[in-house]
Image (cartoon, rainbow over all chains, first blue to last red; front, side, top):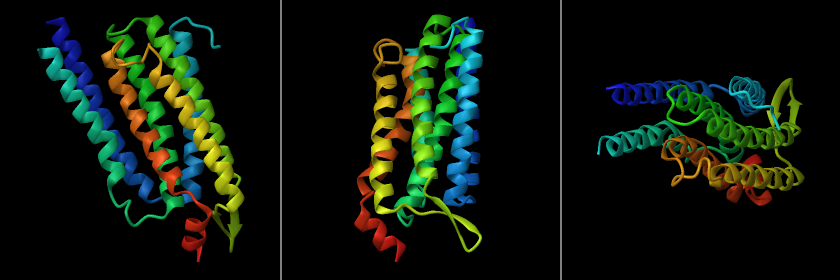
Length: 63
Length: 170
């Protein structure tokens, strides 16, 4: 039963990811090339912050 | 059996999430536009992968140690992708008061080299036993998001030739 709930959660998460990705794709089409690169740069910085917070959460010092 | 069906379903969802949007309207787009779009998709896919890892750890589908290793690998690839974006951003200039991204011939060479490095970094992460399919099917499915985006970047690199750009800019 627990396993089924976990799997359902994963499917829900992936479905949300899919919807989010579609929304992002629509937003991308409205940006210029320069704005796309600016946005990508911000995303890379946000990814670094997220990665560090996850490593802290898992009690692993960043390499 | 249930697990196989779920994994199959997840693969289809991920394929739709990454493959389908990147295929739309790309025929008519310039190589520079494709590059900007795919660079953005890779950065976005990296975020999805990090959140996916956390989801798997939270649901105890992988251990915190595995999650930690996966995050380290993705973090390194993200840093190299940052260098690619910085390299490309140095070719943004202001023309008639508007910021435009125009790759020069020198830019094509530099950006191509940066793409190679980014692809190498992502492939290192994707081929690592922690994320590798046989070792961990759940993580591997999430890694597919990144693999498709990286493949798209490689496809653009093949088209990034000075003569192609000169033709487009005319």
